[in-house]
Image (tube, rainbow, N blue to C red; front, side, top):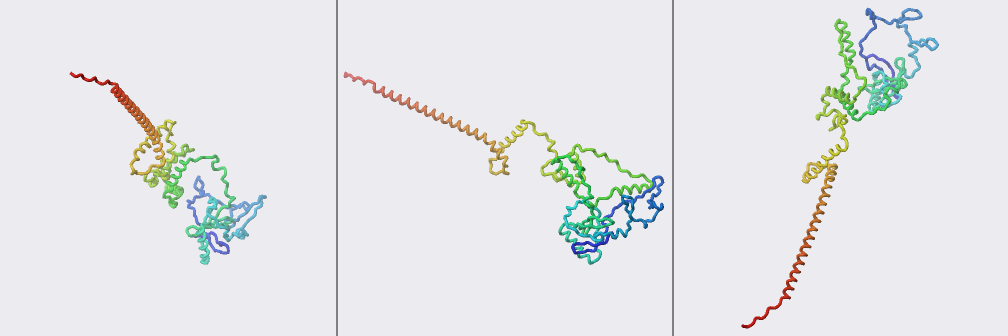
Length: 393
């Protein structure tokens, strides 16, 4: 691997001689500029305006044109002798959590290797310290005629230097996102999260490939062989506006579940749905009960059920204890029956009392009548005249 930069990592008073190697490469099909009429190659020539002739690459230098039109020529020696501390030193400025650096600032990555065996121990020390702390090192480096902020982090047991752009080079995002207040319903959020989980199942970043490069290579091969160029079937136009967001989410989830059938639960529920919960958004499709009539018709079976539950809970051995709500309903259902029973008992008591009074009065009357009859008999017996004596014959 070709060395890109040579220098030293300065970690306090610890120095680590290192080399940088490009950590990434871009696969691309090399295309040249040609004349569309005859296919002739079009080349860029280095032409000097002063001498009006082409000059070789070895005579090319960098220059700067001032606002007043003057030109200053800078040679490679001038750029190499810049009074810049970060020219050959990667100075560690601080250690921060990785989340404190916005990924938008990351640029190109370089593997960091040791320049000699003596650097192995401090290299391992810095690497292990970063792994144990879970932090990254903030540095600065002058690379390819440009000084940039950079971070040192660990990837597969190797230090990686990732150059960054300066914070003021990040453009503000104001005015790009929707500014009006948009309310996302819980059903839509649950459906979106379920779709996210389904799409993420068994995802492997290593399986991604560049479809554009493959399609371009197919076109080039077809041109070389003089056959018809393969064409992709035209896809339908995407809608300009999502009218029914929930329906779009449901369709997307069904399509994703067809590609990942193992995401469907054993009970047939959707991925991410709560147990016993219907498909998100279906609650809104049910018409709510209308007026008091619907409420009464709904409440009547409940009362009947509570009454039935009251009758059937007499046996001691029950399958499960009734809930607090059922107990309240049963108590409520028992109250009218208890009141009715109390009223019935009062009426029975009143009738019994009246009967007793009537019986007592009747017996008293009978006794009075008997006493009167006895008195009359006595008086009759007392007033009867004695019989006359018989005459002798």
